Image (cartoon, rainbow, N blue to C red; front, side):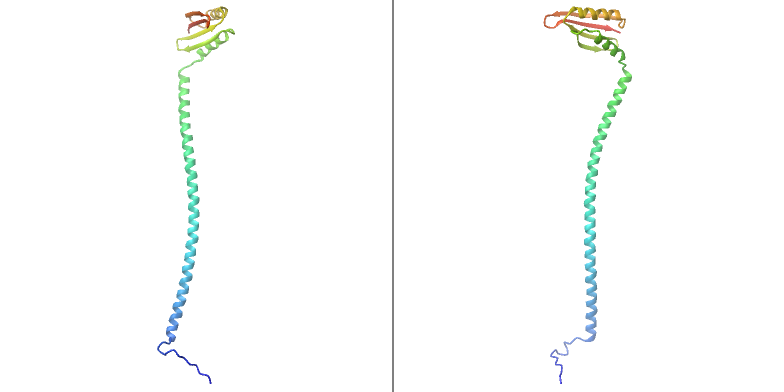
Length: 176
């Protein structure tokens, strides 16, 4: 006959109630461990998603900041351009230089080949021109045209010089 010999004292033996409590605690601990593991994995996944989203948002913010800087520069250029165009329009409306342009065009068309228009300045009442030429014939033709054209109310020769280095030099004042 076989007998079971148990050398553990009876006071140290676990009772059924105790083993039920420990198995219940083990089950609760296993559930808590699974819940904790799932929670940590969920937190890690959420952190990864938020981190990647945050890095994408930072890149987008930097891109938008660069675009904003570029737009500010473009806006500044457009403001300056608009201001300049406004001033040009104001000047074009205030000062009509079509008559002065006609005078300049007339002078340029009636100068002969060795004749040069050195200086030209305009104001509302008159036009000043400095003309140089190598031959007196060019000056004669120009003066006869200016006097005979009828475009000018007066033709005043302010100075007339001759120098071997610069040839003939004449300063004219043409009244409108």
